[in-house]
Length: 435
Image 1 (spheres, one colour):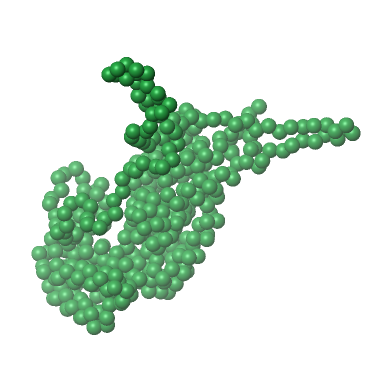
Image 2 (cartoon, rainbow, N blue to C red):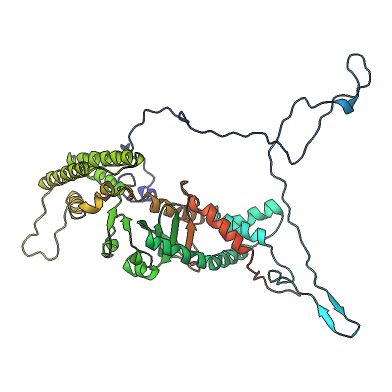
């Protein structure tokens, strides 16, 4: 078992050369590169540039040496260079004044609420610091180094950490607003990921739809965390997950299984046993996925006859597998349950959770896999790989709007941290006062 045929991370494979395996994704007959009809993009000149640089002809004719009338020269050709300006920080001094009336009454002006210190960082660099550490996943020290190299402004990693905490606090109201649409969503995808936080194992829980994503951190992986976060127990729609046991304790609604996980397990069982039923089940699930996608594009559901046919073949394959993998009988005098084979356990899940595994066929809103939630956990995992671990649990929840682009926290988080940057504009600095 390795990362190719299970949910194990690639880091667990070790440094040995991986054996060549077959991919679940079939070979395409399309040529490499952009496909016909693909809308390309290229750098194009703008009508009004931000500046111009003129290259005038010589002052005298190179043949007769007569003086040229340069004020009558016409533009021969235009070429444009797109670049970013050289950045440098600026310092704006805010001044409050006092004046005394002839009657002796003194009048003092006041600073805006955002100008609270004798010297403080401004809103733009604070928003940049949050975006670099959270949106672009840079470690705090490298983000501080980048800000200094780009602008010449020195910022400590501890200051960046404080800004992230302030941003998290400012976004908690938004998190609460995002939680309610997740409760009402017709389909909700959930996943969890182990992270190293302050030298200990914590679990990041994710609840996501195509438009919204909610993150929560907890020391536990199971029901204690699910109840504490309060997102999944209040849902009204179908819960899509990877068959983790704790999700089945939420028996107040419908469930759907991630078939991508099941396909990986089928590959493993086929490699270990050499039996034919895993390949048959794989073909069935992929054919159902293709047919379902085609009918969705046509704007109609899969007809009842096709659903019944897929269900019949599904149980035929399960029965065939069960005949080849009967349960092991516990020897007399032995305590506890008898350990069953991986093939037998997988077949048990296919039979017990058949309705959940095939829900994507009957309900056009249910996705074939849990890819939405798995994409959401991908970038925090990359963040940990870059930084080594997380230092604190001070920012336990994050919520973000999503867009259809493949994630980079991003699939949602460009929008998330733009929102965060806007909130930062109103947050006063916590720099210590100086004389």
